Length: 314
Image (tube, rainbow, N blue to C red; front, top):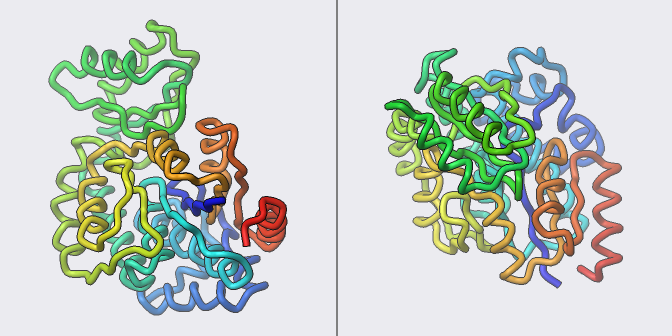
């Protein structure tokens, strides 16, 4: 039996996230206290009380999701087994590295707040867009993007699961690519309510700003190892962890391949730690044979512990 912990990225935020964990578990409350101190403002109040429009600002969303994910991780790890592998979707890779001891929580929340700021500032509001393409294979989506570009940027940004790929780039190019994808047989092309076109070439200015910040941090070797977004391969050194975080800013999230690699490495049970259950659903689409659930509050933590006991994971 091999256990993988996976951590969500942006898109799972909601007012009240992490509050029940912080109220129930001292380990979780300590995470929010540490994040508040590192950031110099009450991230915990923003998570628990809002306002929602402030929580949705990407410079706030990113540390909020990270703190909530680590609050769930620490509550679980005090009561259950440690994982054999970690992985995270986009922003979630920072949570995975905190869980694996590669990056201190305080450093991580400051880094992702800057990451959010840099990503937001890389493209003026309204110039970029993202859209989910459902029911079309990756090769056909790549072909549609190449035809739709017309000198602009549009490309796969999140390769999430079979038949679920998100594209990103200039707004007009994303519209053109979406139309071509539908003409090629996609079931749907859904514009996403995002503040910037993440994980495409338009994010290179953000990547260049973030790199020196990450170079200034001391990364340790992750224990357990990480399967990273940018290469979908196991990473075992702190240097490789940092390099992956730099490159992922403007590169696609290879989530389907990451889960497939974890399964190939022997992972049979997956726990998503953090707000929402998006990754849990994607994991089950990618690898139907594995056990999977999520942990975001005390009730779901109890359910996860029961799943682990039933799976014989001690």
